[in-house]
Length: 493
Image 1 (cartoon, rainbow, N blue to C red):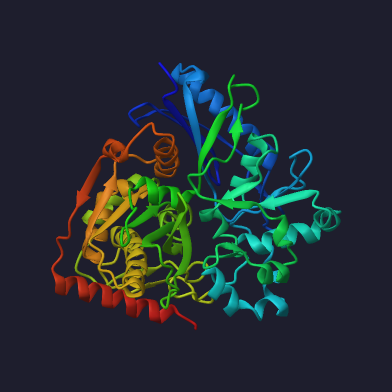
Image 2 (tube, one colour):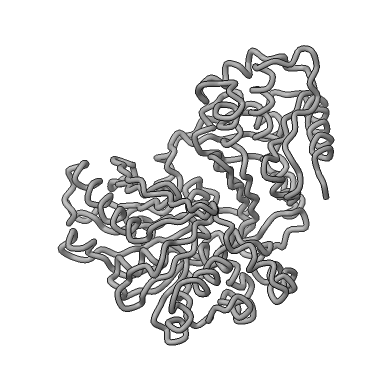
């Protein structure tokens, strides 16, 4: 039969998936394992790197076993990973020095407030495309170096490694032969100069990190070494794609040309626009990152991240008690009064992109005597579309490109009311993937194309549901203007 399968690892915040793709690029099996969410009394969020590595090896074994595929038929492996999470490990053994600091964790906020770092906020943004924040990996690695016993001394002697989860998995899977990351993950650390394409010594120094002790940065479709997955493969298999999960989803959505844009709807949302080979620093509250590097050519993205999209529906269920299941929201939204001026602004922990107002707080604005459960549910769903439209408008302003199509993926895209309202309020077609595993698909497609298993027509395996705007232009403008006024009412800055 020959080596005709690709295994894609999607290592996410909640767990690790293995996806198996056949010789035509079709997904034929998936399996996953969760890992612990380690929450301290201070609210710190951690992951056990050893558990993640063990689960990674196990899901690869499981997916081949479930599919009845001989490991000898696997041609290569792709990896997509949770971004920004910082992890440190022993160079000699590969064992984690401590728990990983998860992207959600803000324990390093104090580090970003230090004068020697906060005073560089402007330069950091100019070099990395990112706002200074404990959200990114730089402050997390700094925290690990300062708080894990002996870490500083070991770092000076190059006895430890540190980076993002992809670099850790590559190191472990190659038995320490390869210490490397890709452009997409490097660009989310807040340590990487996206213009010179190298670790920035000035910024690294401010965070107390030796730039020479960071992973080598490679193209996303480069070979990241070979792995036998602890004896599973008789002949070691190449790891031939590595990307952060949002970047992998962009690639999986086939947004490979400048101007193409996707939104991943989940608990929060990542909205990305491919801006091609020339970076643009946002004037509208977005960040700039590297999309990926392919065969020596790095490409860039504008990105906006939202904390409360699917989480708004969770609030309706778990806190407000208005619904018992997310599946109820579509019918309730359709039953609701449609011509009121009700807005829900979900600034439960402040406003993110493009406003960046951490002092803002959530509000329900415009209630009248017709407001009931159905109307509140409808307003909550519409808040998701309004927030994403804010990001899209900012992207159009920065890129000077008009958006025609928004690619969409994630669980909430099953809600027909939400998708129609998104198309209406954004004024563009929304193309919804019928497949949910876009991050894993992106890593698989990149690996398979690099290995010559597939050509670009592999994207034909993905089918789309397309939604077009139906709302009149003046109605759209009236609703969106009302939303912007409601946002202004909750802003503190």
